[in-house]
Length: 333
Image (cartoon, rainbow, N blue to C red; front, side, top):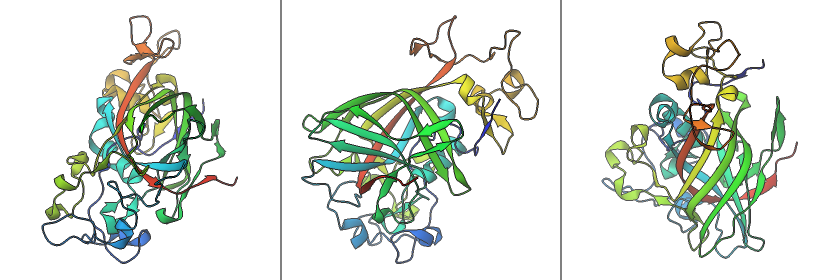
């Protein structure tokens, strides 16, 4: 069995709110300044208003770095992904460090992440189509992003195109499967998140095509350098869309968390002694028929809540916000 090694912070998702490590500074838009101390978004003491030209060059409610107003084809990058289920991925160490990868490296605008994990949304209003998928990391978010187009082990990584017509900005769409690459500073190889029955719903694109959701300016605290709180409370953004999907226990049992040398299946169980084999690496226990003993809350065969006869998956739920970026197409292979 081939194991996919992942960093404990990812668990699976990668997928959560934009908590970020405090500290920013310097005069560059991104890069090394993200590790300096102090906020530099441009607001006076007691005010988290954005005033630096990097943050205000595009007039928007969500720190857009590319102006899509009036465009018939435009792109956004998820700025925040707040996991709502399963509970074990929604808070704590995993959620915080995944958020660090998702949060843009733009400290001048109080965005102090690494920005290495990017999920893009590219709309074509003429055809009513949406192209979505992961992106390669970029050193400067102002330079734009390209869709990852590569093979990683057994997984083919490429964006998928779905029907998602906009009706006064409102939209929804579904994809049968999507392999989302999650890049971290700690490894050149992406972690693959294999999602099934992906649904993007209850979303609203702003009238200027620059935002889904908005910056949570009124809740951010200057005494906390205008950064989101621990575990994303308060969050950096007010979310404006929903995401749901499921992951199978068989797949996550092949995802090994190196810091604890356990599979993500064991991590999701919440009970190492009860559901782990105790071997190295520690994977989920199986019965005499080779089936994983742990029961999830979802059935992959019916894409519905688990039953006594089928409980081989976990449902994922999340809310998200997104900001306009330049999308340059497929990354060269």
